[in-house]
Amino acid sequence: MSGLRPCRVLEVTVVCVLAVCLVACGVYRPKVAEVTPSVPSTFVAVEEEVADIVEMDVPEGWAADSSKGNERLPVVLVSPDGVYDGAHQGISIRLWLPAVIWPEYAVAEDTFDLDEFLRPRILGDMKDHEYTDLALLPARFVDGNPARGYTYVQTDEATGSAQRWEYWVVGRHDGLWSIALYSEPGQTELPPELDGVLDTVTWSEP
Image (cartoon, rainbow, N blue to C red; front, side, top):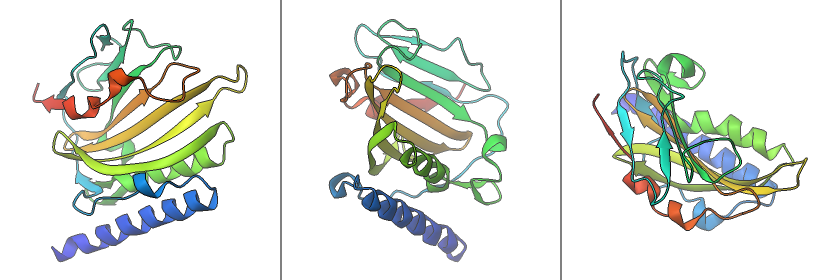
C-alpha cells in the first residue's frame, strides 16, 4: 500500500489545482466539483493485441457507427443518423493505447493517471475564449472502471453557435478510453436521450 501513496498525493494535488484555476476564472461549481475519494485516478494498462469490445444502450432511433476504427483502435460514434460530422448531437468513444499516453501521463511503469491526462486539456480550454461554463464533474466508475470528466460549452467563432459537451476519460487494462457526449449545435444542454447513458457503457473480451 505504501507504494501507492505518491500517486494519491498527486491525485489530490491535481484536483486542487484544477479547482483553484476554475475558481479564479469564475466558472467553478462546488456542487459538481466534488471528487469521490473512493474513485482512484490511477490505473494499470498494458498493450493488447486486440482491444476489448465496448457496448452501450443506443438511444431509441439512434445508430452506432464503428467503421472508423479497428479491433486494435476502436472508435464508436453514435448519433441520430449514425454519422458523425460534428453537425449533430451524439456520442464519441475512442481508445488511447498505453504506448500513446506513455510516459507523459504515467506515474509509474504501466500505471497512468486520469487527472494528469485531463489537466492540460482543461487548462488549455480555459485559455480559449470559445470555451465557457467549464465545470468538473463528480468522479465515478464506468462499468467498474475509474472515470474523470468535465463539462463545457463551446461556441463556434464563425457561426456563433454554442454546443454543450461532456468529456470523460476511463482507465482500463487496455488503455485510456475517452467518451464525449455533445448536444445539437445551438443547444447548451445535452439531449434527454443521453441521460444516464454512461451507466449503460460496458466492455467485454473480444
